[in-house]
Image 1 (cartoon, one colour):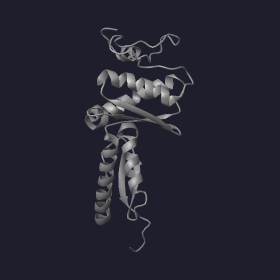
Image 2 (cartoon, helix red, strand yellow):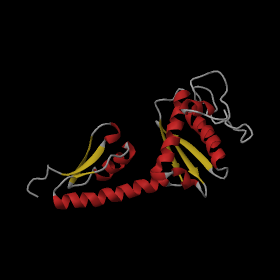
Image 3 (tube, rainbow, N blue to C red):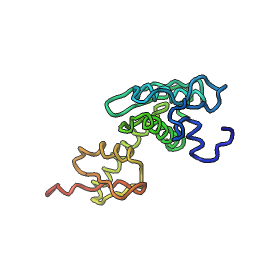
Image 4 (cartoon, rainbow, N blue to C red):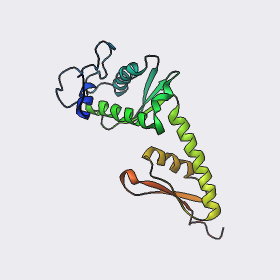
Length: 197
């Protein structure tokens, strides 16, 4: 596959096309690494499947990076570590998001579509969640003082969840998600259940 022309060609190169289910997944460049990007049998351990896939993918990007995969209930988590790991996050975590989509596709193709996938690189997601929590706390103070709601820009579900959790016990404000799809956003409102202050 010298010149992939569309998404199907790229996915086929990663071994996650719908083409031949019985054929072993191809390598993008057989000389680049002896580890295939997708390895394993259906019903294999999801953490092991994801570990094999990410080690193959990350090994092609930067052989110095390490991958640690674990499973906690219905969530398979992967941490990519190394000196340059945070570069994999991309702008606003978009590259990590794309890697998560590929990881989910790999697990889904192997019969694990019920699982959620979380991938972090160099602690990016942890730092991002801390920043969102601090933002939520600042906005909660502003909303409580002004008595007026604050509507945030559309954001991914994982970001909205961080803010909901950060403010769920707040005595002066509540949160609500409104809108549909990629336009879904969060509103921080003054609590209306406070009577007389």
